[in-house]
Image 1 (cartoon, rainbow, N blue to C red):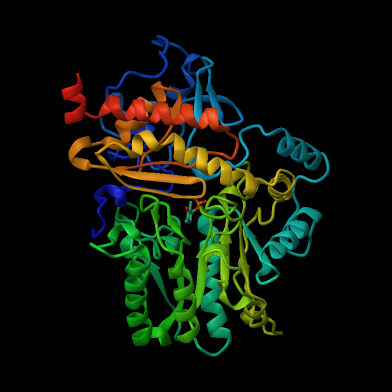
Image 2: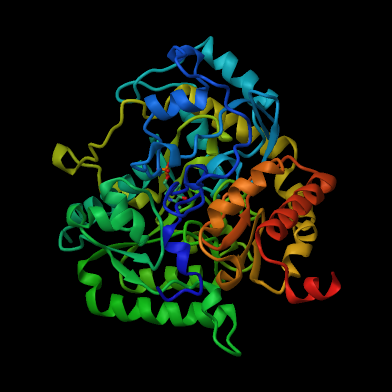
Length: 503
Ligand SMILES: *Cc1c(COP(=O)(O)O)cnc(C)c1O
């Protein structure tokens, strides 16, 4: 690990490796429960608390199962949602500071998305997309293409982020094969990059805790230096770090471009790496290198898309603030998570028209024969259209610039703590690293539980504290959030020297 954030490798996008000393609710031992569990001795399953039934009946994701069952922290049972709030059975409210694994954009039970879904539900719930089509899938594809200025289109639908990544990888490889370059079958990813956990996506994921057990199953990608700005040496800027990372990429491409199909990156922010942020010049530089060496560029905007970084697509910032010319866009762009407003599983891959042209042939072997049963589900597409409507109607990107400032102001107290470093923000993502010497072990889990006591759902990644809230808060709520997070930090860290002297 070369990053100044050792436990980062343990983090999944918003996911906790619960139980692995990580950021999740399952990994806190013997900490008082947020809500009392009624005495259920001898009760029928129906009378058991939901959390206990869940532990029995549901195999929870990213969760360690301890041999001592009592050591497995019950999941937080949520009864309903309302705007940025999650509400448990006892009516306790939790501010969803991480947008429920980075998916929610406009709050829970959003009236506009609800209404659109009810209407769709009463019209068409699902139809297969092979040989059939429907208005929501078509309209969504058209609107997303328009959002790229017409550069990327041919929306290929799937359900989860990892499937979109698999599709982009397969399409890239197949494109080269169809164009007579079948030796190009290797991929390049960034150090600590995360692209999902199916076997193909794991091959381009450099997060040991998710990858190592399955390494024998994967065809490991080349891993090159991340432009993570935290690696800046004395006197070095974020742009200098990006330059170093580009030099390493170029060295690899110079050597092996004949075997390499594509480079995959998370533009601007590597989420699972611990909200590692980097200089946009890396994107422009990587694009130029991919052109020079004839390698595809895949932008995984599953986490950073849909306005998270301040623009609808993170890639729009590849030239600082200047408009990105058509040739400087990626070849493939993957979207998921926020695209349905956090309502339903939907992912998709946009690509350049010339990609699809390589699949136009009478020979079926040249076709892209990839499918999922629920590809382009009408309900999911309708939720996505309602989400795009909200962006347009409420001028969300402009208003988020204001919200981003409220967030920065609200976190100023944390940023000022001497144990906090690398305070960073890109749009609606704010993050900072807490000195591991000060936190001791299991910071993420302890913070998570302590924040819950204060009505905030937060899940640090390793020693990185971050917030990525839905776009539905005002300055007062941001301040409240900042106070709760600061209070949580002070509650779980020993007092600083200064505080001790003051006391
Ligand atoms: C979450 C995520 C994925 C995987 O998406 P799933 O829906 O969890 O499969 C892929 N890439 C990035 C950057 C992500 O944040």
